[in-house]
Image 1: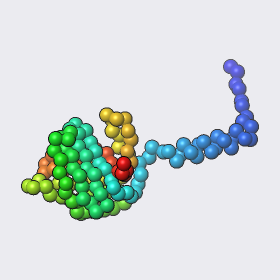
Image 2 (image 1 turned 60 degrees about the vertical axis):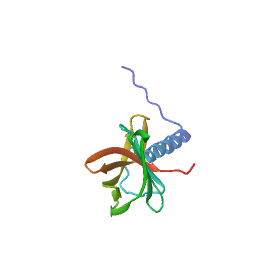
Image 3 (image 1 turned 90 degrees about the vertical axis):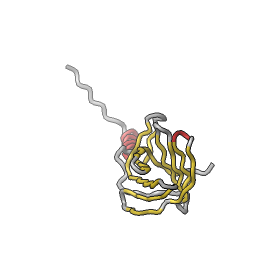
Image 4 (image 1 turned 45 degrees about the vertical axis):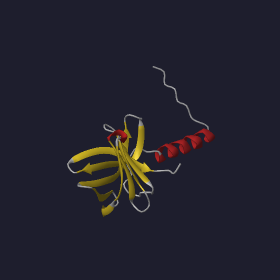
Length: 136
């Protein structure tokens, strides 16, 4: 058996160290703190739905892949370093929006988001992901 030992030149070792530090900054470990930036958007699939929260927590809600749309205002009921919960009403329907720190993968678009989201309408639970919404 032949063993090869390669000693990287000094410049290469520094470059390797910098690359390792950069990769560590892109860690797949979920964020441990919740810092929402408004406007904020949560979205999910099957059926397609989304909630766009504005600075004042007024929300544009889209359900059933766009066939149901309405505006409402959420009222925060809980906020911690790991999750945020708010409630709203739309007619006779009670809405609860939960946002948690932690990576979320949208398998339809193969996009990874920094937040996990859940929208509960009465007894119906919709799972999704969240991100800062950008004004276009």
